[in-house]
Structure formats: structure tokens, C-alpha cells
Length: 255
Image (cartoon, rainbow, N blue to C red; front, side, top):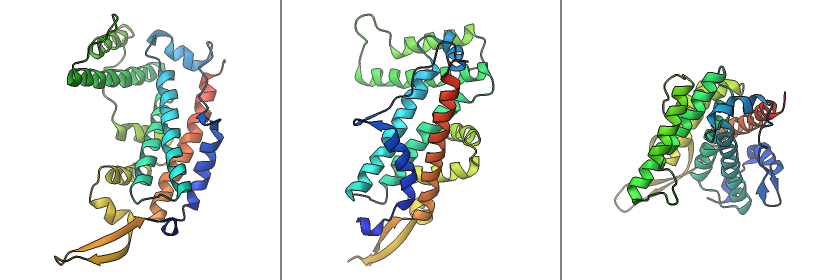
């Protein structure tokens, strides 16, 4: 699809936010929390498994996803699928950061952080088993790291850890950003459908431009982005990005 098929002006507010987060070809990192801040107090008993690390890496990953779409757009290389996939990744990243910051109470925020770390190390353990990798130099395996994480949760008498589900994270993060949870989830579902090559989002979130007959009597339909639907996803990303920045700075500064 050429740039003639794609206006994309609605992306400019998001792209402006992304450009402000860039400096000298790199993304400006969120600063580490001040020692006397609310976020540092949350993280104090978590040791190496701090929420701040997860928030900061989620933030940077979200910037990278959105910036990739910005660069594709500038290059005139926009296709019907990638814009959905990239903004889906950005939305999930920004929502995860908000979810970690806005749990109801310190115990819940710690449980969320440890749950995400636990899932991270479960995935690491799976990769280690797939590849036969063993940590060298006395390093701990993913399974051993999980045991450490579970021990911290037990010592803090937290509610049971549970693998975070993206849908649940979005449902919780959307209201924290002043958004309607079901509308955010609807946009995310469409984006996920494109990311996984599903059939239904082509009917619900694309615009047909041409039908090309084939020799077997089957027509191939040329589709382009339905900008009206993609616009809402871009706006949700922009709002969550801004809210994540504001909320992080408020909680990471000294009281």
C-alpha cells in the first residue's frame, strides 16, 4: 500500500510525543526512583525484582513500537497490518506500566510486580529448557529465580501470585488513564487479530479498495487500514503514554 492510500494525520499527536522522548537517536529513560519516593518504598523489600525496572523497560519498549510506526510512515512503507501490530505492542507496554503503578495499595502493587517477574522467569525457564542452556558462573536458572520470587511473596504474606493476562491488565489500566476499559479492549482485540493473521479483523477493521478476480473464480480483495478505527487505537496509546509518564514521575519523586 502506498502513502496515497494512507493519510495518517491522526498519528501526528502520538508521533510528537514519541519525538519528545527521543534524544540523539536514543530514547530518554525514565529516571530511577528517588530513595524516599513512594515507588522506592514499594520496591524496598523486593530486592532485584523491583517494579521500577519493569515499568521503565515497558515504557521504553512501548516507545520503540510506536517509533517504528513513525519511521515506517515517514518512509512511505505503510501496509495494512503493521500499524495495528506496532500500536498493539505499544498499548500493551504502556498499560503494563500503569498497571504496575496503580494497584490499590502497596501490597497489591508488590503482588503485581512479583507476578510479572514470576511469569518472566517462567518464560526464561522454558527457553532454557528449549535450548539446553545452563547459567554459567554460578548464576541462577529461571526456575531458581522463580523460587526466590515466590519466597519474597510468602515473606510479605502477599496474595497468591498469578500470571498477568494482557486483557486483565488493559481492563485495570484503562480507567487509570481516564479511558473506558471495554473500548480500549475492543481496539486491542482488533489489533491482536491483525497481529496473529486472523480473518475477522479484515471484515471489522479494514476498508476494501478493489476485488481482483482469479483464474479459479475466487476474488482477492485489496484492503487498506480503516483509519477511523485505527485512530482510536493511536489515541489510546497517546493517552496511556502521557498518563504513564505523569504517574511515574509523581510516584518516583521524593516525598
